[in-house]
Structures are given as C-alpha cells and as structure tokens.
Amino acid sequence: MHEYQSLKVDEQGAIAHVLINRPAKANAMDEAFWTEMVEIFDWVDRTDSVRVAVISGAGDHFSAGIDLAMLAQAAGEMTQDIGRNAERIRRNVLRLQAAFNAVEECRKPVIAAVHGYCIGGAIDLISACDMRYATASAHFSIKEIDMGMAADVGTLQRLPHIIGDGMMRELAYTGRAVMGDEARELGLVNRVYADHAALIEGVMNIAGEIAAKSPLAIRGTKEMIRYSRDHSVADGLNYIATWNAAMLQSEDLKLAMTAHMSRKPAEFAD
Image (cartoon, rainbow, N blue to C red; front, side):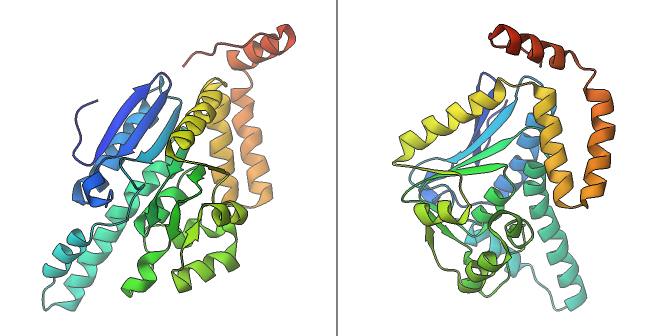
C-alpha cells in the first residue's frame, strides 16, 4: 500500500484498518478522500488476505463530513448556463456516491468505529458499512438540512433500513444530534464503549472473530443480506439456492464441520 493524503491503511493480519487521517480538520472529507476511498476499498475487495475492514478517525473525531472548502470550490465553478451547471453537479454527486458504494459493495465486512463528530457525509459513510460501534460521547447528526440541502450521498437511501423510516425522517428533517447511548437504542450502533481506546480494542476483537470464519461463507452472507434488502423474499431465496449450489462444494464446509466435531479452530484458506 502506498501513502495516501487523506486516509491511512494499516494491515493487521487479516484486518485492514482504514483511518480517516485529517485530525487537524476534524477529518473533514476533502477532494482526495473521495478518490482514495474508491482505491482503498477496491484493494480491500481484491486482496484475499484481507478478510475484514475497520474504518475509524484519527484525533478527536470520526469525521465532520464533507469539507466546506470543497463545496465552496464547486460553487465557484458554476456558470450562467443552468443546464451545464445541473449536469456538472449531478456528475459530481454520482462521483461522491461511488466512494461509499465501494464500501457497501466490498465483498468483505466493513465495520465503523465512531468517536467524536460523525456528521453530514460521515453518516452517509457509516450507513454504507456493515456494522457500527461508538463511544458514549459520539455525536451523530444528519447536518445537511442545516445547510439548506438534502443529504445526497446515501444516508436517505440506506439509513431507513438501519433505524427505520420514521426515526430517519425525524433526524433528517431536524438535524438534531444523537449521542452514543441513543444511537444504540435506535439501532444505529450495535454497542457503545466508554472511550476511544476501548472502542478500537472492542471493534478489532469483533473484526478478528469475523476474520477467523470461512471467507467464502462471510462473503456469501454479506452478498445475500445486501441483495435481500433490495429484492423480494422469493428472489432472495432463489439467489441463495443458486449461490450455495456452488459454494457448498467448498473445502471450507468440510473444514468447518471437522473443526466443530473436534472442538478445534479451523484454519481456512484465503
């Protein structure tokens, strides 16, 4: 892995720890961030030795969302032609969406470890992750409404499937802050930790437990969950039947059965 401008990647065994690395700017998402997210999660997806990814923030916050300087620059590029402006904005929004689509579409589970601010675009990011964990002092807010815009990078599409439609609407319409304990009550996060150190330790332990499972089984499970969210029950059942027609012939199944019977941990190939 080479050096990145806005992100940092630390490969710890089978776990890729992706760090949003602009602590002096509250990890605001600048221009480089969006390109690097796509590149890194393409690497996570392609690298068989990586089985789980964890996303966290350097310094005092997870992320304060999209860098306002980037928005100001985009505003400065507008012309007198409404049609061309609209096309430029649409293309740019789709480009930003691609960064978090890369997280959701990654074959490996992606876990968000949230502390401090998680606002605006950061909510879009964690909504694309498989699971979310936080500190008690974590601060969540769909802040776009206070900027006079609708969130457009995935929150309004993904969050209803996580916390339900009604609560998502309340948070999206008001922009109010949700702290760690309420986030857990809403189902936005799975578990709350006392501080940042305990959060990272806890999340890395969970990631390690997932990484010890059959990679094919984990990847198949993620694919089925994601597919079933957007399709009927019948479609989902048909897809898993077709998927497992091939995957149940894997050596992982034999290894798992043997390990279960012998009460010894299985070691699966990447």
